Length: 462
Ligand code: SF4
Image 1: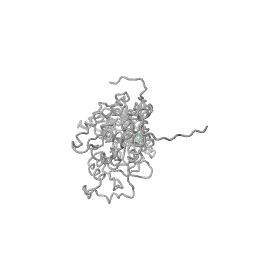
Image 2: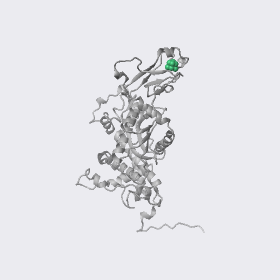
Image 3: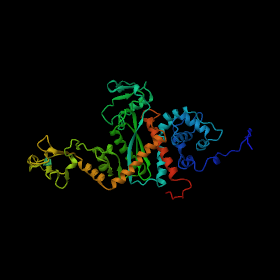
Image 4: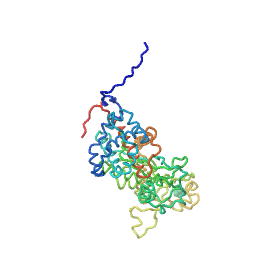
């Protein structure tokens, strides 16, 4: 018999939101790890003690977390979804009849109290602490990488390098993102990362970088830098920077130091791609922080014209010389100088030369130094550090480290494809930092919910 739904309006309902959220719902899993106790105390100093009560900051943070976890890129959309979705209401501690804040409230809070209190970073670090407490962080091997995220600007609204002069901008008249750009001109992650000026500067967000690093058409972007623990791919730290190599390397050092300071975790080894293999970067990682580098060395001594590269010569540490493919030695000094400093083991740059008589009689000369009388090699001040990195990369463990490095690339792919963060919504270094920090928090929460489900056997947390 054909059924027909009976529509009848009831004045009163008995409704328990709790019973309507499935036990395996993603937000249930995440809720167990989002610990916001003490948040009100942390933020109390940023609110006036008189006047009307504000919107609860915990509610705003829960709504923002929903947005980033579920890939809802607009705050207007988050408000609509929280209004309609029972699970979202439950996660935000809103009853069926409670009013959802207006989307305009987010903008005011983000640029004001949230930023002054640095609350997004505090929430991110609490989630990392949860990951550590639940045994998801080994702490031995870290990976670092950066991904380009498009800035919210257009090429049409930009100036050429010759037409852009930051000193003519009046901060009082400038929009927020431009004021933030002026404030970061002396910061290593932005203004002072490199003396090279970008070809174009975007008017609405001058701190974004005009880059063609993806080997496609150039665009304006920021770099999202992740430092991850390679056991489970937990993001230990996140940093926004200009999309240039020097800024990304500087961010790596900032993240390593901050992780050591906040969580007392210093990795034994670090894996990264060639972009991190400059001499300065390796000195910071190996000499100053005592971390094994599984990082390919940037080698300007490698030749592409078919003649012998530096790697064809063997370094003989004991006798302070190179051995060439013909078996002859290259030395930095041959005479018996009375000055012992010429022969000291002190770290300094040196040029090593083959003997003229050896090269003139050598059958390999055309492959080695066709345009000069002898072959010479420059050995940098910290070549020993670069050699150490080369040894690490040539070791058997490098394959394992490289395989684990893929986890950071997968996190960026997830960030763009699933969480929808392929283009920024906020402008200016601070807005970008907020977006990256919230997105990293969301990724760690999703991982916690997946790897430590509620029905898993209980584990000792200490
Ligand atoms: S040309 Fe000189 S440095 Fe090069 S392989 Fe021959 S002897 Fe060695």
